[in-house]
Image (cartoon, rainbow, N blue to C red; front, side, top):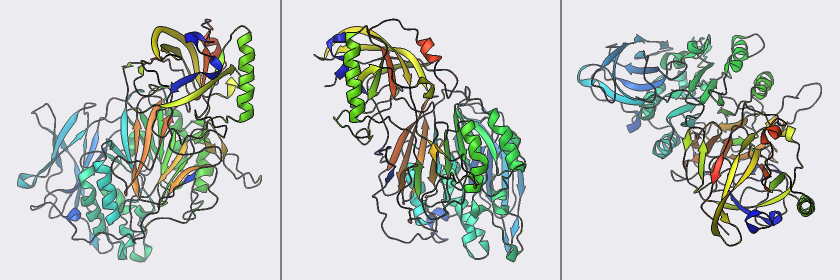
Length: 628
């Protein structure tokens, strides 16, 4: 019998786990959801969402984006149609009556037989972090006022939420997506946009009036929160038959980005820091071969990422590298061959892409197989070890339902992962954060104890701390607190294909703990419609795929955990079609416990681990509950 009077070999513990209904051992899930058969159609020019504001020369198409590298500047852009007017922005903080001025620039462009309005860009600098500002554009009775909130100061434990949208367009479905995002109670504070904005190039002569309608359509979001822009193929607008030979002309005139702040030479690849995230934007349609400007920039940029300051490394691009649909299949392959080894080397956490008009996510976490043989072996070793002097023990997590199949997460769709609070009503001390982080439902998980039987050198995460039991398992009554020392470690399943070479024929993705998770979200509603032609069988690297429109949320909680969710248009605001927890140090799967309270030097155990990130995380946890 272990402490608190119950057998270590059959202990039941209340632990949290979260991932959506995905069985990782044999490939992923193709959603059974079938979108109603209906053609995707652009909204007519007279639609309400395209209407210009009232008044002569009233500013329209207002949008903001980050204006420097760290989030203390904002670029404000807008268009006036009748005349240039003023390019000055008035701005003031929420608690101040003093209005400041920032002077911008104004310009126009021509594309074939179209002449743009007067496009204004103004950078507001030296703003305070985490502060709400109001700003005013235009003059006289047609001046318009908006507001934005600057991000918190860059730091490792700064929570922050991003919205994710791609391939939006201006169809009826596009409007549903934007409405869905705006009404989401957990919508982002900033949108990461992965390319393909207006789809004006799908119209005869690349009808640039559709750039204006798109700008008015998205203003309800872009004027109030920054959108971080990525250029897609529909931004190229290369039309030599129309005499237009400068790529990206309308896009670069309408949408400015702070590329010079990260020493980029072009606005198509750049980086920013925002809260605890380091965001790198790449161009699928600019040269990326060896010694090209984008190649040289990324080669120099990745080593600059300080994970102790910005632990989350996010990459945005347009063309996906991993795609199990027939549409756009392998289009990103040459770029993947160039850059994927760097992503693995620098442990990029997640890559968001668009282009494919459907949703797909690659695998993230892999739970160790808990076969019948493995269970019996662990049980026998456990019995033997209990007859001997107790030593460090390993807890193998099973599904708690008596299953001896490969571990499936489909029983744990509403609970929380280990390590970030341990679920509902667990207290946690994590660096400067104290108290309960958030609340979710719990799941029962069966744990089994046996001697250490895994290779510590394969682990990519460690946490060292003390677990305080305050319950008596057999009676469910409160008992005196009992401390248990533990080491928390884990292994993940991610994929890379860096071994590929045209000569060696190795062209299948393999498990790679240092690889990113790849997510394709080019499904926001554009006129080209959905991609529905999937390859079969579903590749092993693909965790979840579905042909429907929607948006996503990436909610960073702290330096180790972020919650990702994808919402399709047909669902209610709070319903998620796919979700998972990201653990930046990859996965928390195994406990090593000094259950006999011998004071084992945990630091010595830690030295045996190969850490994917610098340092470990110390947890102090206690539970007031007992669940049978």
